[in-house]
Image 1 (cartoon, helix red, strand yellow):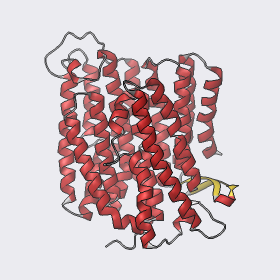
Image 2: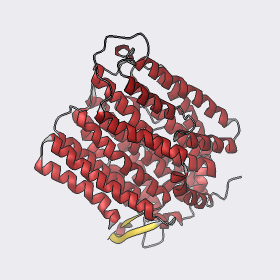
Image 3: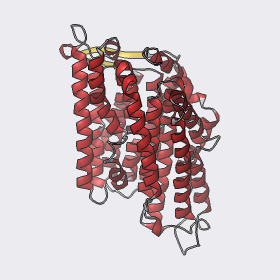
Image 4: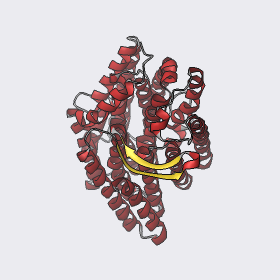
Length: 482
């Protein structure tokens, strides 16, 4: 019942907000209460997890189509549940200073998205996964279309078409592999993982599945929707897209490609690693050339996601564990960076660096908080990004030593564009800014996130213990690896 509650609590709260339409403050309070309840339940699941996969709900739904209502989680799924539950209270809390209007509708859409995300990470049936996967798109679509910035209609439509294309490719793939199971057909992940598909089938089916997850992350060359969408979206929408929804692509690669198509994944891994690392370096270079703070963070997110995808396809313990660990670290980091970008926009009325600078003396507390976040972004030791990047680079080295050179390039480029952003936002000659320093509410949101960054950096096993056993089990299926 706990798993069902994770979906129902935000869903019911969202329906109440739409039905009652309370004042903005009340709506935010109800949404925050709902997200804190799901956080408590998720932390309880984490605390009581015994290291084995859990299936809590198992019922027939449309057995003729292989559709069943099966909810559960492995250590990897639990990590994604924890990520979603930890970040949504902060994402909702961000709205207390967002003058978007109609707080009831905004928070209802966020809660609908959270309920669907919980469903994605708990679904143990491929069709059920697909339904939740597509449902996450609808509330974000309306959030962008209603509260997005300049050119919101054309950008939102392009985002929708990209993700719809990926979703249709995934639906076709699910239907195909389900029909390969013995009669009566089943789309349960256990049944699909037991398939031994011919190599020629795995080779083309890999790209049909991979398309959906590559678009969602996104990685090169399926990324063109991302920079404009992240820049145009309201702060809360950008946080959801970058910190949580992008991780559905990482999770989907592990759950679908590595378990159902292990030989196809092993065959195409060099191509995927090459595309991912090229995209990561390309995004890092483009980030440095930006004159818009929010757009710089958007390209930074794309660069990090490319490195995580490459590490997964190293197909060794270091790479997969590091990539999964970094999903949590990256999610927390993106909420911090986009929140700071939103704070600066509220103070100067723009995301452009030309309107910023020379504010360190007037905003010493904000300068300190931002510097701590930058330290995490460039993977300084003792921050949460350091263990993840070390594991990912080690995984790439174990695959091909020269690939680690790309990791070194990314470290240098990441430090350059993040320190460049800090310089352009806060340093330089003092200006006559009258904007206030970080206040108590902003400390209340940023300080706990920064504390999480250092806590996980000091004790990375908090995350790694969730994925160690599933990763070893996963690697056993890659019998064709050298």
